[in-house]
Image 1 (cartoon, rainbow, N blue to C red):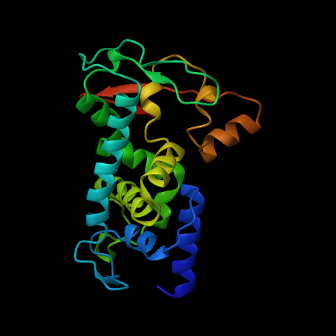
Image 2: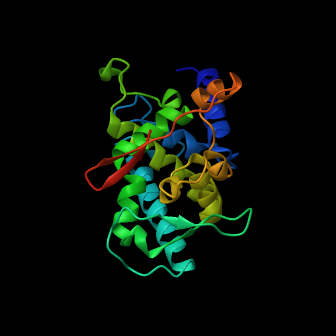
Length: 222
């Protein structure tokens, strides 16, 4: 891959994330799937692609979800299908309620691999991944999920926790905590960027359909 192609992928990824990297090497590392031909970024050897950053990003996402619970004084409850949040003053995120269940359930609900992989496709980040040549152009669910977590880890390394939290919200990773409230999609627009499909449907004067599915213990936005 030449430098122009690499720059294009990073530029596209920054636009998707809504974040400009001070040190773009972190982003470039985050875009490397396991088995990518890129084995070194700066002084860092990439033995497993973006796996290290993915592990970091996974923990940052968990920290953000737990911090939201602490800030909103959420007690540990039993997972249920009751409304997940109540409204807060305009311009701020909704307040989670105890009915969202225990912290581990909320983390699994928002950050399971299947949901993260779908988000990776929806926001367009999948096209930025530097793939393993042996996969013949295919990108696995795990690779997509790892990449979404890795870019969060990269933002944390580059700009700290506040920057990572903004990107987590911008990508829609924590939207599911309020998806079952019954709020109109517009009420979540400050958190979740609209997909290309959603923009296209709205441009035709129609309203997109939103649904949630239960898969094991995880709720998924489709």
